[in-house]
Image 1 (tube, one colour):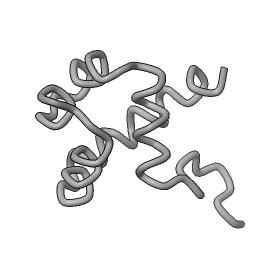
Image 2: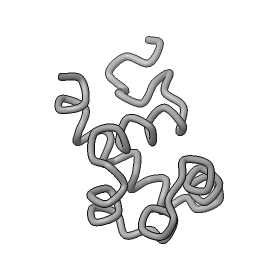
Image 3: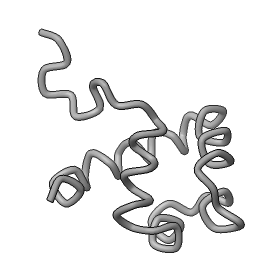
Length: 74
């Protein structure tokens, strides 16, 4: 199977982050996942740089995306 039930299949980290920011906004996102790049002068670029270097933070973002997917698609 190609991707099957994997909600992250075909999604880039940039797409995932942009969806979460669009839905929650930086403030709420920073409250849900306490990452400096979300809470202090946030930007997609700085956050992506951090997330690409930090596996635990990327995992938290991906998990939040998977949990939020139904809300994001409304």
